[in-house]
Image 1 (cartoon, rainbow, N blue to C red):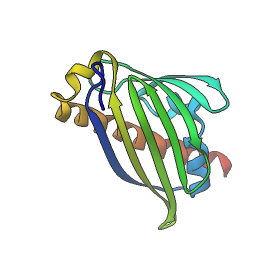
Image 2 (image 1 turned 120 degrees about the horizontal axis):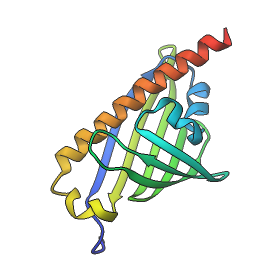
Image 3 (image 1 turned 90 degrees about the horizontal axis):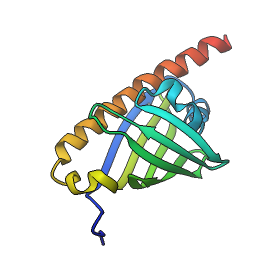
Length: 154
């Protein structure tokens, strides 16, 4: 049941292919503090302990999400993070060796809280577009980061 300050529930799914083995992809995805180095829309991350971090995310629309992330699983094949703050819910990355790299399925379910909550349901198409932009930045940044890391190892 939604409270009076809760907004819409959003579910997102995406499939990526990355030219790196699952272990290398996992190592980057579980290192939350390094996200700002490769994901342009993750503007800051601060460690709150071994399994927790605070992240500020800003995609194309002019607002910044303030999130608290808790690592639920860091082991292959499924990485999972619980999300709290402006959004609450979870994000799961399912990784599998595929075609000489890694197939990655992203699943996310979150409820919007805070100042955006009253607007979330009415702005669903805009929020989905903004999320796609954020994911596109993450995919491009992750591919470039993995490629640089592979070059550095040679």
